[in-house]
Amino acid sequence: MKKGIIVLISCLIAGSVNLLNAQQLPSKADVIEKMEQTNAHLMKKWPDPGVNVITNKERPSNLWTRAVYYEGLMALYSIKPDPAYLQYAIDWGESHKWGLRYGSDSRNADNQCAGQTYIDLYNIEQKPERIKDIKASVDLMLKTDKTDDWDWIDALQMAMPVFAKLAILTGDSKYSERMYKMYMDTKVTQGLYNKKDGLWWRDADFTPPYTEPNGEDCYWSRGNGWVVAALVRVMDILPEDDPHYKEYLKTYKEMMKAVLPIQREDGFWNASLHDPNNYGGKEASGTSMFVYGMAWGVNNGILSAKKYIPAITKGWNALATESVHEDGFLGYVQGTGKEPKDGQPVTYTSKPDFEDYGLGCFLLAGSEVYKLCK
Image (cartoon, rainbow, N blue to C red; front, side, top):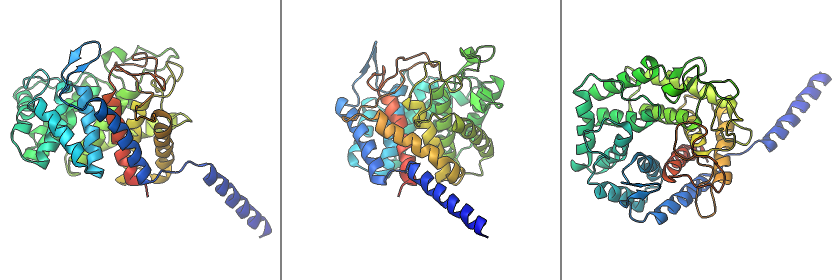
């Protein structure tokens, strides 16, 4: 009996020490503050959302990088409905006459990404012009039998939610059915998903025999983050009785299981998921989407809170304290590319070629972490 009491006391002491050492989720107010701080930085830099983006060349602001930002802005608006956020998104759509980059006959997922926010804004105020071009673009794709357009995994995040939103908006399953066929073409026919590791090769350039310097397969953090975001957003849109919901859920769970043990001790994920020494270091965009995916899973009762909240907490706290500058600039964001070496170096002060998509990912993460916090 005495021995049992001693063991019990020892366990209680150890548990107390673990609780003291464990990180805590921030308050809702703290999460919103970080989201507003970073968002204000971009809105201040781009007071006119229709102005073309200039990096190495000039591009219209309805390109995919800015479209991902608006996904995040609408997520922020969903938990803090500030009229200024809504108007900023509307002004962006109107500045492009609700059009897509390269027109409504484009099949490219990057060009369709803006349609996610166009549809969201249509759902707030049913003005037909807001969805005319994005619907025309997808409808043109459905007139053909071609399903292999998404030959890089980033495309899943850019376009899948558009198809899912159109399915709900129109009540026509032809959109969700085509989305599933195209997704399975990417996953199975093109073979970009490795079920053994629960991760995706970015495109055919990285399938075996291609390897990282340490001999492992190349799994790019942000690329896999795009897939996580795609699956989460699609499952958030479609009803659970959708005939393919279980497929999305199964792959999502496999990915969450795969990324959990490879989180860095500081809370970030490396740009290269299986080779931490290949351009190793903190990276905010992939980290944001893994945090987003995990937090969504816990919020929806899909993932174990006990198992995943410590990783979510470490990830969000790392982003909020290590990435966010005092003026709202977001550090440790890898520039555009397709593999760990691109957009380097990635540091606290380095500026990626586009600063908008990283913020979009951060705001998506914040929107779900906010729901977890007290």
